[in-house]
Length: 117
Image (tube, rainbow, N blue to C red):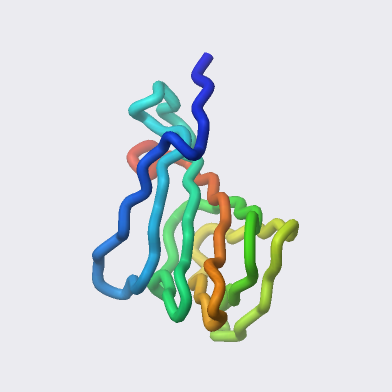
């Protein structure tokens, strides 16, 4: 069994094309012995966003703090707030944005992309 405290996991500012002002923590992942699933914590800072993208696996998201926008495959922005949960289906384009002044934080659980055929 692995037990970790979120405050002890380092966060990393993601610096990739299409991403702005986003930090990520790998709460549980392959380095912990979880070879099939990965639990991540994202913090989207003010005016930040993830890329508008899709991938071949579904993932679940729980909004932990603040509020933000989730853009669906049609480009529609849906405002989400703390306590809400989402299912992002496989191969559906999506994006997380923070048009607000306070940080927008969520937990995202995915299958390990290396396990996807």
